[in-house]
Image 1 (cartoon, rainbow, N blue to C red):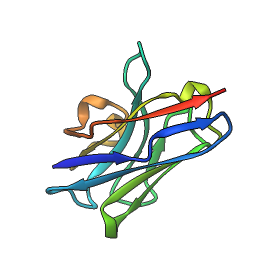
Image 2 (cartoon, rainbow, N blue to C red):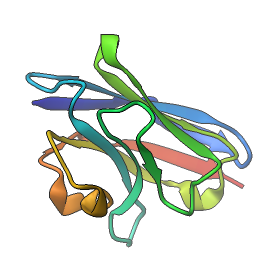
Image 3 (tube, one colour):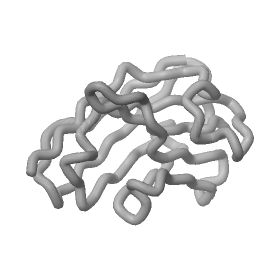
Image 4 (cartoon, rainbow, N blue to C red):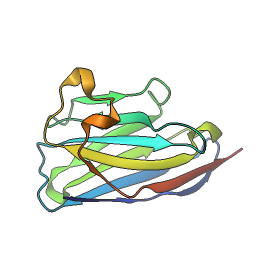
Amino acid sequence: VQLVEFGGGTAQAGGSLRLSCSSSGGTSSRFVVGWFRQAPGKEREFVAAIRRSLTDTYYADSVKGRFTISRDISKNTVSLQMNSLKPEDTAVYYCAARDYIIVSAITSASQYHYWGQGTLVTVSS
């Protein structure tokens, strides 16, 4: 299973970026896909996740109302639309996947088996 992130870059505070995670090699629309991020000197943290149901989504409190995770089943892609960006959103963003994760563990990075290489998002003030 390979995951590849696209769409990182630089934005000004208040701006928007859209990240995409493309999967191949055995994933399916049934997989749980999550986005995590890691800022310099900090631990990797949960951002958002989507389960097999397209309406079954989860968000960290810090991004709720600003970020939206979505899934395009036909393209085997999961996207993260990031609006109202803040400088504290600056981090390397990773997508991760696994065939099944219970809801109570969906924010835990250790539950995910497959990871992308990460894409850098920089938000300037």
